Image (cartoon, rainbow, N blue to C red):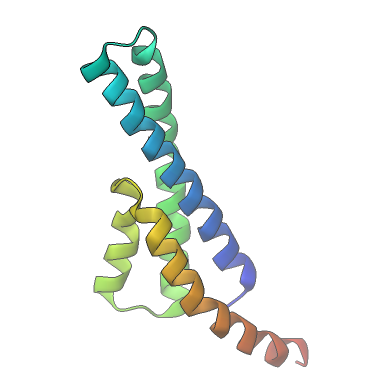
Length: 112
């Protein structure tokens, strides 16, 4: 597995996570605090999160298939982009797990 597969997953996990946290803040501002402009902010962030979550799903599925994860683990990683802050914790765990694997495979493919 190439390092770029892990890197693009990590980028999208952070992007998805940040947008989801912003969406939560927007919803709090809109429905609880009644902040002016929260409607527009929430609409823009929700659309961006929705489209970028699809990209996250593609990259996470690609990573999982190349890492040969079991179905339960794959589903957990895919759903991490729907729970505020979960993407950050899941990404960190996945990165720690796979960085060693990527580093071990790098010398083997460089010599080929």
